[in-house]
Length: 119
Image (cartoon, rainbow, N blue to C red; front, side):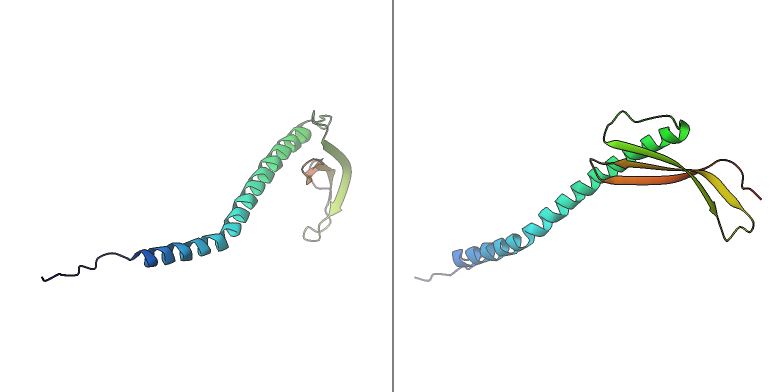
């Protein structure tokens, strides 16, 4: 009898070795993927909170007497005056608005000038 040995495919040992190698690689990289996902989620939440705080800032700029309904948001409006060295003999006055979200630990500030520069 003439048997032809047809060797096609992988042996069981080769398949188990391949699965073991792939498993080791996946276990090694899993913490990295979890960390990336977690950071992406946190940054997305922080960006959303910052844009919501920016909307409150816009309301305060339009109406200085506006106070946010959210008790976690503090508004500070103070007079501010400055002189820029790049503009000779000019000073700017206005108000500095700072809004802080104490719950999410976000602070944004802006300067709103009163009008035209003084000469």
